[in-house]
Length: 187
Image (cartoon, rainbow, N blue to C red; front, top):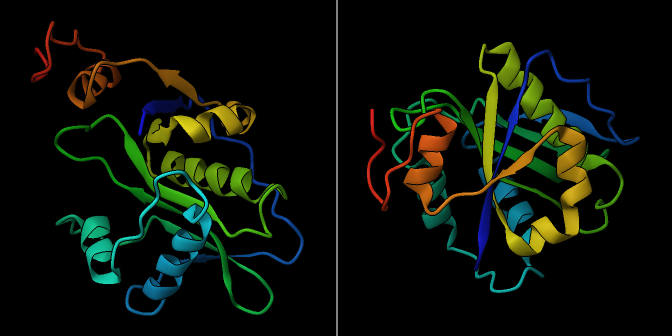
C-alpha cells in the first residue's frame, strides 16, 4: 500500500475543535478502554483496501512499541451511550524525531463519519501537542485515504511531505539534508 507523510507546523495555538452534538471527549484509560479502541479501529478500517486486523494483543504491542509515555495522548470521542465513536492516538517525540510528535492512528466509526468528528479529533490532537510545547505533528496516510480526505487534512493545516523513505522523511522534518540514498540523516 502506498503511503504519504503529512505534517502540520503550528506557529500559533490551533483553533478549538467543533465537536458534533452528542459527543464527549475522553482521555484513554489503560486497561479500561483498550478493547474499545481496538474495536473502533477495526470498524473504522474494515472497508479499507488491504486492511487485515491484527489480533488484540499484537495490536496493543504494536501501539505501545516499547514506549513508557503511556497513552496520555490517546483521545477518544464517546457517544451518549458510552460507545467509542472516534479516536486519535498520538505518540510523543523520540530520539529519531525530537522535533515533532506523531499521530500513530486515528479513525471514526462508520455512521459517525462525515459529521466533523475527524476534524475535531485532529484539531484536538494538534491543540494538545501545541500546549505541551511541540510545534510539529506528523502522520503517515494511506494514498487511498489521502485521495478521499485531502480537504480534511488541509483544514487542519497539514501538507504532504514528499520523501524517498522513512529516514529521509525524518531528515526533512528535522531540517537536515537527506542522504542521497536511504540511510541515516547527515548531521
